[in-house]
Image (cartoon, rainbow, N blue to C red; front, side, top):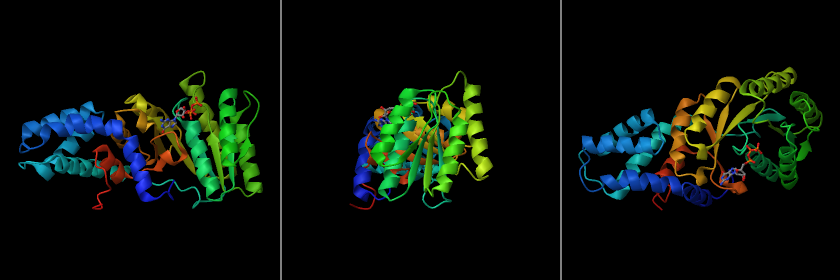
Length: 316
Ligand SMILES: Nc1nc2c(ncn2[C@@H]2O[C@H](COP(=O)(O)OP(=O)(O)OP(=O)(O)O)[C@@H](O)[C@H]2O)c(=O)[nH]1
């Protein structure tokens, strides 16, 4: 992820966000070029940002900031995009953080939580591949023991990544598996342990109870574990991602968010209200199916891509 050439990842980000940026630039930017920016135009801009799923609070702040930057001035397309990118970047900057499992304690335990289909397995697989490529000794743990298909899929990812794989037969106690896997990882000097978890049980409470149980047993071995709890959210569900953040964020010790499938939606702006609502920062984003499409979250680059700016603002 991080060792990609800069231009490459920015191009992938821009391509991944093209649906969202088209929506924003056509609907939002198009209407405001040439005429001097006035109050009515700013109000309309705010409406358009809400339409684009940025949420009312952020839309108001972003519109106000664009007003500060451009009020009374006639702007061309690029100037409006630059102002939008700057305002969105300022909004997101406090919610940006890096995911760095190789600089923490060893083994560094990462728990992946989120509803089924959010991209948990894929994200875990991409991270495993990135880490083994960097020379790390990685263990993948299939904590979703109820679904054989999920275990099978994860095994494929682990094998492809060259990571070791721990699983148990259907319905086994996920917390017991996590505990034993962590013990083994300590004994055998693993660098990173990536634990997948169930995304759906009989009900929400059962799901949260299971997650908390896994966390509790890991803490028996090391009170600092799990060292990271990544909540994986699917951007294509739009504002439902907010509801998921509320459910998991409140109970599961979430320390970072991953927003996947930003390439599959025109409403990628939803990342903004999700970031605002969450106590945990955004650490990674998924902008495509490839391994290199899981990227560290860079607020400024995200904002520029969303605003439809083709370069990184470095004058290239
Ligand atoms: N386009 C695109 N697809 C993605 C991205 N991340 C994941 N996917 C796809 O989303 C689908 C669901 O991903 P999974 O990783 O299986 O989701 P999960 O949360 O583990 O779901 P279960 O296996 O059902 O628990 C797969 O087809 C992935 O290829 C992304 O960033 N972009």
